[in-house]
Length: 256
Image 1: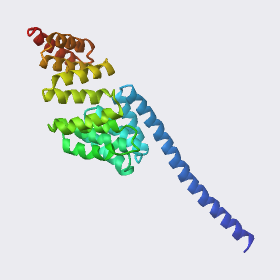
Image 2: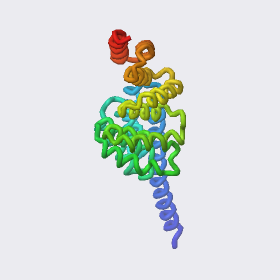
Image 3: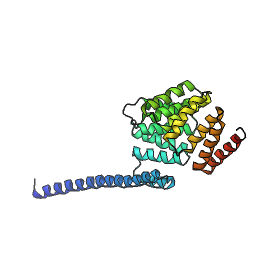
């Protein structure tokens, strides 16, 4: 082959290499930019700044959408913004991209709980409750307990709450859920015992005090009920919760 032919082949190979590099480098840059926006969105979510978080996550999605962790974050942000339908769309996409993404499956179930679609939620939680690789199976077990509680299948609810507590004995959400089941079934002394433990585990959660106060009230421990309703009002983080607790305290005052 003449020298000119070798030169032309060399130029062609170099051109192809440069084109391939430009595409590869561009894709890597896009992913890097998307990751930076996602990280910022996650930081905002941790601070409770859900609108800002959503803004950054949507920027990331425009740059690179096929990131299961980003799709899970978007679902979580929409769930925080009280839009479970959009949340479900993103959680499902996260699972399409990564079928073994147990956290996204748990979040999808949580979105179904928000829609009060108890059976769909159960279908999500059951597979991950037995997933040995899932770091927090007590979340899924607790959510199963709640779904069965809402279906008034109290025996199953108690079973799943107890399974969650075997993994994490001080998990406030499971303790609270178990207490609610005991309250619903008239087992007030057991409800009080478990709800007192829930309050001790999460002493700044006003809703736990409300549930404990209700158990005291139904067990005719009116003074304790009044004091606990007042405590709930004192630490309530929303005006609605504060008003509910204050009203319950006023009502219980007449029973003392």
